[in-house]
Length: 325
Image (cartoon, rainbow, N blue to C red; front, side):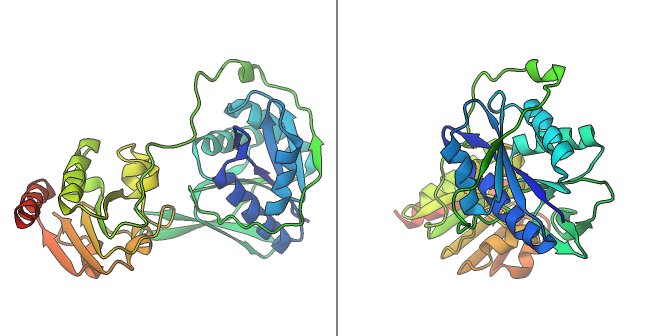
């Protein structure tokens, strides 16, 4: 029987949505393996009802461990102790920086195999196989584990949140020995949202920017163009530029972002990798601007413009303003 331990990040009385997706995914996979998915929360004075609520997302049991909120090293200590005593075959994390930190630390502690940026996991022959996009999201790599424990860290929004479990889960408090380094860091401030909120799903016109913009300031060209269009217009972005910190995550389009279908989708400096395509291919009209004539996005665009977006976007903005008087 292969049980799965899922880390559940919580903040201000709520469970992180990527953690909820990981719990749902863990429950589904554990069932296929003939085991159970257990969740673990680490923090100070964790509410019992908050922990128990993870049963609604598929957790058969929830472990709680006292420790500083939001720090990675105490979570590594607690999860290592839980895995050592509970016989878990896999540890699963939703997307997010803390998940990467804890997953990597746990892999080092246990000598375990770790796969990051996972978008799909499946059971095969009594084992889990993780899939990770590679080569600019143009191909998929399959990862299998040889270590006693396999660590799986998902991309943001990779796992679907499924509510409908058996109700409140039993909660068990566990103890662990804190490592010396656990007390060497403190949190100064904490925030959960990555940048300002951006509503792109309801827009009729989207001006989306990619790495071709060159820098975060390049989004000013997209903002100016969207403002010229007026009405229901918004600016969106690819995963690569969101990860680089150029634009808020709320504006990300693609498999791990949002799916949109505006009347006009204008792609500026976007190569058109498959992971991005799945999030915008239903747009009514797709216009692409890229200096690379061989960019994949031209294969599914209605209109393609090969050229320097830094020259084209301002001219297009001027033309639209003039047309509108």
